[in-house]
Amino acid sequence: MNLTIGSAYVPTNLLASQFIVQMKVCGGALVIPQNFQGLDKLETLDLNNVMCSPDDLENLILGCTQLNEFSASTVHDPDELKIHSNSLRCLKIENFKHLHLVAPLLHDASFNLLCFEDNCKDDTIYRKFIEKNLELLEAMAELYTILTPNSTFDHLVNLSVTVKFGDLLSEYALFCFVEKPKAIQSLKIKAISSREDLPNIWGFAILRDSEIIFDQLLMVRFDGFLGTANELSFLTYVLAASPVLKNMTIVPVEGQLQKSTRTYRKLLKSKKISSQTAITFV
Image 1: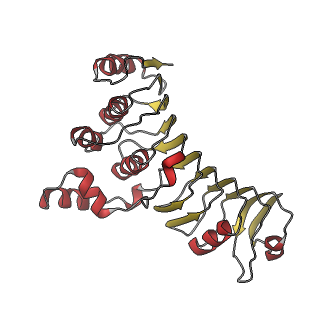
Image 2: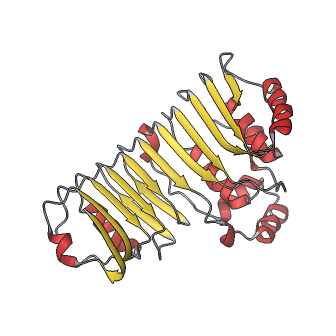
């Protein structure tokens, strides 16, 4: 079922149906009634430009006991998304400041991390960084809780992330996501980068004896490569933590081929655990 609502509310009688398997809602507002009994047969749910409170979204997903795929594009209102599902295997979301995620069967996940910059106060980060003599990652952790720690990512195989390199909080959100998966095999990065490099959290991540090892990571793809120091440090960080990595594919921004060639040489000289890794620019 595809439902385009516009500015109206989603009809509550639809939420009483026990025969809906797929639902896509575009626009409007979604309010879960107090007598909501769940959608036992719903397997796929797609919310696009929908207004929904964190509690209503949490109750909706909890009531979909067979939900396999959930996609939320521009869900208005919640700074915090709460997703609890024992059946969810595919997840794609954007437009959130904090994610509380419990989905033990999650296999494929895609996150858009471009919505943090308005909330990022660099002067506050620097002040805490300097006054408390903290490492940058520790200063960020004291200020921002982006992802609630849990075992959700124990079985995650495919991770796709859109991130802005050059935006400190967006990069920190990326770090919060890549440090969690234990079984990840495929990592895809879509970068929207600025030429001005901010403090490099990946340098801190590399230097701090990190226990993060992607011991099952086989493939990395980086789209939108601009050749900044932060991007290079991130790729070096991944290379150093991926003992069985086979392929790293880098897709430069148009017109950056010359700089990418120089970066390619730097990556080849970087410390790699896996001797079988092939780095390719396309």
